[in-house]
Amino acid sequence: MESANTFWTTPLGWTLITAGGILIVTVGILISLAFLLLADRKIWAAVQMRKGPNVVGPFGLLQSFADFFKFVLKEIVVPAGADKVVFLLAPLISFVLAFIAWAAIPFAPGWVISDLNVGILYIFAISSLGVYGIIMGGWASNSKYPFLGSLRSAAQMVSYEVSIGLVIINVILLAGTMNLSSIVTQQEGWIWNWFAFGGGAATWPTIFVMFPMSIIFFISALAETNRPPFDLPEAESELVAGYQVEYSSTPYLLFMIGEYANIVFMCAMISLLFFGGWNPGFPIDFTAGWPPFLVNFLLFLVFFAKIVFWFFMIALVKAFVPRYRYDQLMRLGWKIFLPTSVVAVVVVSAWRVFGVGS
Figure 1 (spheres, rainbow, N blue to C red):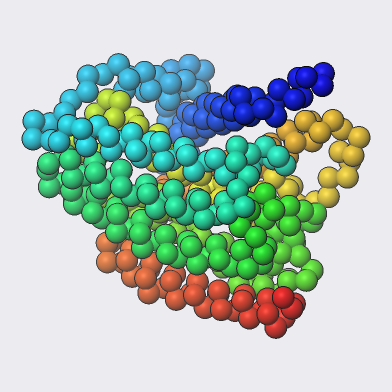
Figure 2 (tube, rainbow, N blue to C red):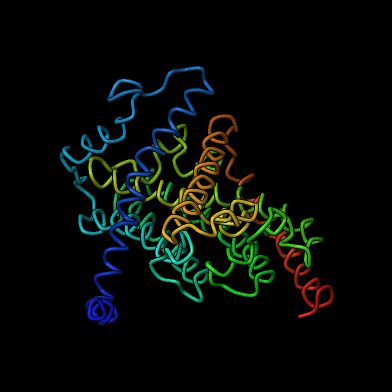
C-alpha cells in the first residue's frame, strides 16, 4: 500500500492522474453538451408550442449524436480562395481554448484539474484568446460576410469582457482571493452567504451591489458567448451565418462545440462566483458520517444542477428576447454596464476598507 502511495507522488504518477482528470472532464463536458444542446432545442420548441427533435432515439434523446456523426462523416470543403491552413486552424483553436478554460473549474471540494491561486486570471487570459479563432476563421474564408461577422464578434467579445472583468473584481474584493475553490468555500452554509446575496453576515449590505452585478454578469455572458439576443455575428438576415458561412462538416462542428462549451462554462462561472458553486444553500451536517467520495458526489450534483438551471435561463432568453441592433449592443456594453460596474467596484472597495475593515 505504501509503495502504491509513493508511486502517485512521482512525476509519472502525477502525470497519469492529471491526464485521467483531463480525460474525465473533457468526455463529461462533451456528453453533457450533447444533452444540453438537445435541451436547448426542446426548450425553444416548447416556447413556440412545437415538439422539437423527437425522432432519433426515445424522445429524440440521441438527436445530438446523430448530428455529430452527420458532421463527422461529411466531406470537408475548403473554398477555392481560402487560406487552407488558417481556415482549418481557426475552429481547432476555438475548440481547444473552450476546453482549456475548464482546467481551473472546481466541480466539488478537491475535484479540480489545476487548483490555481490565480484561477480567475487564468480564465480571463484563456477567454480573451478565444477571439483569435473567430477572427482567423472570418479572415481565412476570403469572403465579405464571414469577415464582417468575425469583426463584429471580436468587437462584441472584447467590449463585454471589460464589464465581466469589473464585475468579477467585486467578487475578488469580497472573497480576498482569486482561487475559485476558496471563493466557493467562503459561500458555505446558508443561502445568504452566497456572494449574490452579499456574502454573509459581515458583508450583507453589499447585496444591493452584488445582486445587480450577478444580473449584469449573466447578460454580459450572453453577449460574450454570442447568444441571442446578442447573436449579431450570426445575424441570418444580414450576414447569412456570420463567421461560420464557409464552414461545413467537422470544422463547423468544432466551432459549434466550442461555442456551446463556452456557454456552459459561463453557466459554471456564474454559479461559482455568485451562487455558491457546489454549496446547496443550507448546512450539510447530515453528511457527517458519509464517505468523502459520496459527499463530494452529492456536492457535484448540486453544482451540475445550478449549471443546468443557468443554461435553461439562457435558452429561455434565446426563445423570447428579440435581437439587439449593433449600436444598441455597443451602447449597452460601454455606456451602461461599464460605468455601473466601475461604480460597483468603488462601492465594494470602500465597503471593504471602511465598512468591515481590511
